[in-house]
Amino acid sequence: MAKLYFYYGAMGSSKTANALMAQYNYIERGQKALLAKTNIDTRDGSHIIRSRIGLSKECSLLSDVCAMSDDEIEKYDALIVDEIQFATKEQIDHLAYIVDYLDVPVLCYGLRTDFQLNLFEGSARLMAIADNIKEVKTICWCGRKATCNARYNKNGIVREGSQVMLGANDEYIALCRKHFLEGNLYGPEKTEKE
Image 1 (cartoon, rainbow, N blue to C red):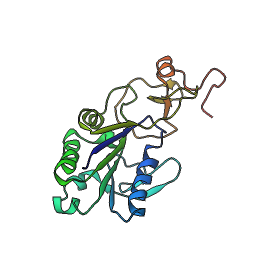
Image 2: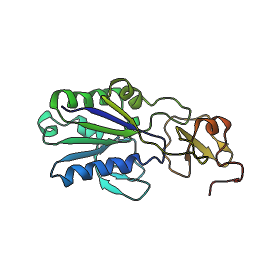
Image 3: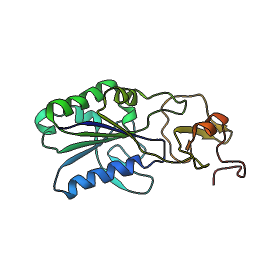
Image 4: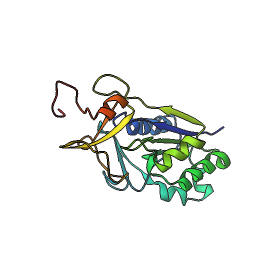
């Protein structure tokens, strides 16, 4: 029986690497897994998924997947979607349809919350309807579990702005809640990110 999975974690927790490894595992076992990402994620090009550790793969766009016929989707053994936080509620509901009516498992990877600790639309919908929700963990500079995605610049943590701003290690850092609330990016012995 197919399920709708949501694997969430703070930035730098290897969500994308896990999505790419999941697709590889399907392929290695002779199965077909369709890899996709949301249209908003254009950092590495519109049809490439790339992890921080250098893994990359061509992919489809979620909007194109949602426009596919049932017969086209049923040719796959699984659907794997990265950067799912940028999906719309309607897209998440369509993924649930794929699971429930086409019996194709859907594995979604993404952030749960933004830099202000607010849920993204796609993540909120998945938190409400996913069959299986799992955290992909990473740590803060202090060694505690990181759950917050801090946006920062030369002046420190940014607390206001647009919810969506594509960036990587030069603009975001994963922190535990305590250090996020304190605005402590690097610890007492450091003055800037190394």
